[in-house]
Length: 179
Image (cartoon, rainbow, N blue to C red):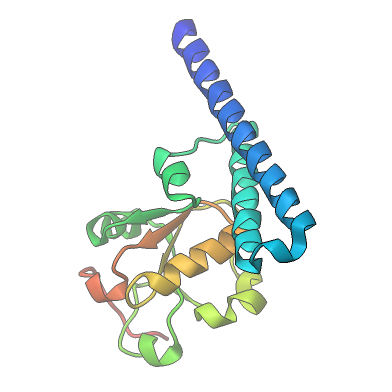
């Protein structure tokens, strides 16, 4: 048991070291681009700033003792994409559900119990979502806006987000009319 714990601790330290080294490299590159000013595109600087921010969030989660899945690091985001079948199990287990479609779209049906906040309204309505670290399934019509919503919510400090791959169009679970 002690050997397993020691092995996990060593792996965590190696991951932190690796991410820290990458963060240092990206930060240096970002500083260089900022100093050069007109020599680089604003988009390059923006992309580097996003990478620095994401690596910082990765390091913060590791430092807090949280687990990062390989897909988090590989895909560069802190949420997980799940299939409709996996989402169905999560809904049956009582996961919080967030529908980010428009009112016109939700009129045709929603996943039971979903909180309805259109993606365009998230910046001013995100505080309607509890910050209790409970897992939250996020969906839209096809999975693109919900991924953007997961990204936005992650940047605002929300975690344990799950994106429904394929969106409501692929949902084969129970549907209800919104109240």
